[in-house]
Length: 117
Image (tube, rainbow, N blue to C red; front, side):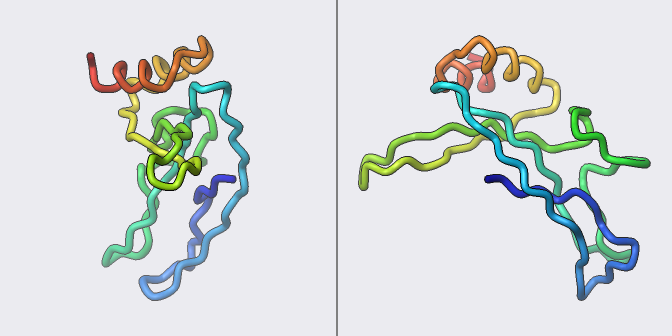
């Protein structure tokens, strides 16, 4: 399961943060991996601010309202267990990665798309 911050309380102060957390379960498709959206909470001298900054309501499907990671499962060479690996995705490449996942490309090819190879 993946956690992400959905809303910052208006009464949040520098010492205490108050926010709600939604549980969303992302299921990987084949060996392609999945997209993970998230936001960051920063303490500033004006209070707690959520990034990326959005005017009004944060829309779940708007690419510009979130930071994005591409995640996939990879088996560890040391212990043989599956671990989640991730790489940052610029907002302009999210649509390319979505289509690559929909076409069930292996995660190594998707990584090459992100690196510009």
